[in-house]
Image (cartoon, helix red, strand yellow):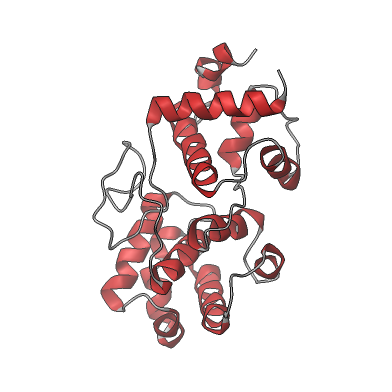
Length: 232
């Protein structure tokens, strides 16, 4: 089978198995959690209108920074701590005392580093007039390829496929990539072989994450992945 067919089969199977994921979760959205992983609520399955406001867009962006090297439940704790101190806007993050900011985001880890990155990104966001390009985001301190693509896909509604460690594990286990395949090569694999569709890009990434949480947290479980039976 060609990559185009394989990737479509994977998507169809995962969507049938898990259903719409409703990413990116937002604090003020009283949505349901479609799975047993992630945060308690804030998801919005089948509703692709979010973010609806500039502040929601900003919340997604800083969430993308906070989630680096940690799990989403930890980020949710950090965001809730921050919300208890201020309304989450770029102006308020800039004005917030750095010590209070560090304490608020401590659950996400690397709080010294991430607090500086949040301040810097907030300054950038305030000056933003139009949808940023990937190249612009990658020039920001602390914004790598995965973070930039997450911001574009979920905050700015640009179909830019997100690749994370879970995606790499799944594709390698299915013999679709080499173990040391570069980020941009994997991103290219998806973007050249599936329709450039915002909803599909959002769901595909979220579905891969959910599937990996069920089968790819422990290496001994990789062989139990049901995709192995349908991708031959």
